[in-house]
Length: 335
Image (cartoon, rainbow, N blue to C red; front, side, top):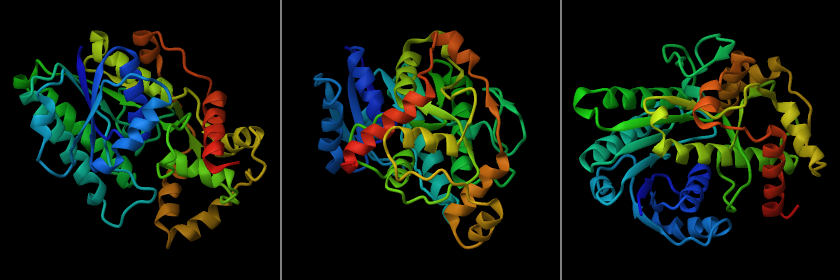
């Protein structure tokens, strides 16, 4: 039985990846920054599969300890772990350093450990910012010379560092595919509401977002995203490719809110905050400052045709993705 090391195992995407791997006959080693979260992940996985071929190890993106040991009995690496914050930090290196250094630690250990292939979780934010492309594809890169925000910059620089490493002549035997979701939504497996989309959904359902920013989002279904991570492991056609898991069209945040409201949550607001007011708040609120960058980006489409072609992917309807997340969050909140 082939074994996959999944980093950041307690994350929303990673939990779904673990389930998909187990269902497809792999054994899984999940890495955690704190082993206190092991039972939480096991409980989440049990909601979808009884497979017990799951073990855990302790790894930190900023620490060398354990990385090489974690790889020795694994065949593949799924590097999902990456730091995320709801608002831009005052020092962008709080995100950039762990994202880039953690990625390089993982790749160097994978090389030494004889890993066959790496599937790395990147993001649409490494593709679509710092320029005004109206249709963004896997060939585009976020321009980090522009003010694109710390998170977007961290994902872009980490991915660029990864490709530079993979493309070195001495690393030609190590294959890699990067996966690029947008705003990831879908059913929650645990009661953790700290992630970006989970915290947004919780606040929306509880009526704690009285007015919405004038932003557009590209939605990715977490189940589709996990499935594509797993399929990429054995797909030679995806070697060296950047795989988008986003909806072709973006969705205005009010449309997302309406789908949630129509799923039975009456407290959801669909009112839009005037942009001039958001600009005022952004002067002293880092979260608002980050949102303002997304407003400036505006609406755009993504070209996911290569994903459809390589994997014969049929995306989950966005309405179902949003509704499924709302209903699962409703259960967590007792609504």
